[in-house]
Image (cartoon, rainbow, N blue to C red; front, side, top):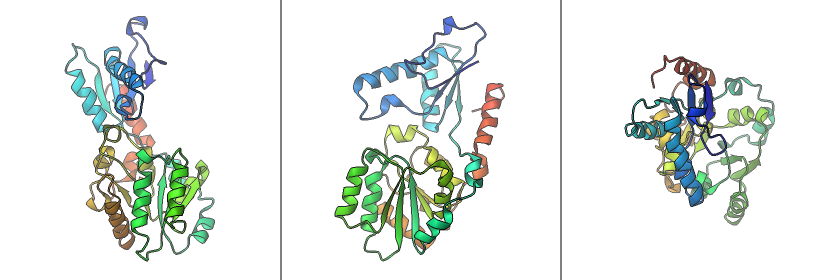
Length: 289
């Protein structure tokens, strides 16, 4: 068996060059050909390999429902036998929730009395960075002790810091920078709620943000958008804001800070151990997508 994590120029294979009984499995975690901002030539190349993956593989493993539907639709245009399509979203590592929160006491001391809202990820405009900042600007005069913690780094961080400084948000927005993995659980325990903004784009419908599942393990509200895998994972309307709408996000944050009770899916169903069992059964031929 040959398992390819994505299929591109660097790891291309030819089915005819493989042993006749070699089973080829290709995993897709995004639709690179649809990402705006990627040079046109690279997008065309990605589209070529996305199509070609269907011709050289026996199985396609997709990290989102969107990708599952996308590649399933394309198999109907292929001669038989076409590859089997499987749905296998991301998950959270069980050790994350069980790790000793080594810096939690210090964080609780530093941010005592605050309603701590945590975002983990790259600080990029296309990941909703400025939607979050605009929402906190809306909340500036609310009188609520809200604090946004941005865990991560990214190319738009300098502009974000300038926005925070110009709008007097330094007391509400904390740039935590890169957080070492052993410290993540401390930040997640500190959180009163998490943010996972998305946009109504093919890119966000197709991808499966791993942060969402990591948040889920801590049983706190995850404020997100009814887009892609978030719409599959969550069903409580209190958790959703309109994509790109900072005012709506501000209202959701305000509401959750007043009443954090919400309906969340069982985290135990979304661990990597569970995903490994699903993948194993799929590879053994007993899994149904």
